Length: 161
Image (cartoon, rainbow, N blue to C red; front, side, top):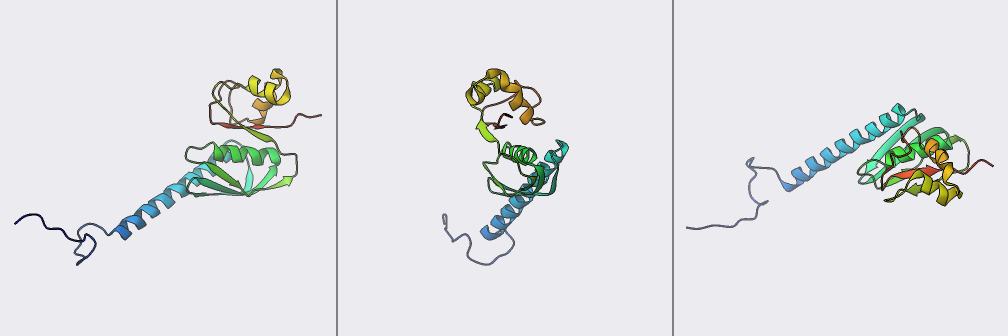
């Protein structure tokens, strides 16, 4: 007799396996549930770090996180963006947060291999001994000045006049 070929998704559905549409729908539901759980964890992490944002909401769409809410100040807003953005699987943060007290925005620096806070301070401020400013600006996400890693994004505030 031999091997006979048929069109896989044609014919009577008699309960053998699932259709491609059903599999795709289940996969989409699983991804949506995982994204929702990850978003909730980001909100909880920000709260655990003392970064309070009224009505904070995170929505994950593929590798982009959309963050909204009302932060008390610019530093809190920027730190929340860093908490969310420095999460595995997130490539972009769409910052839609508002700020109660307007302040100058910090710049952001992506750490490369060989960077130290001192090297970054020398480059940005012209003085390597200003590294504590960068360390303090990134607390509580940073717990030690030597614990930075390539790919991590840090906030670099302007120096007070």
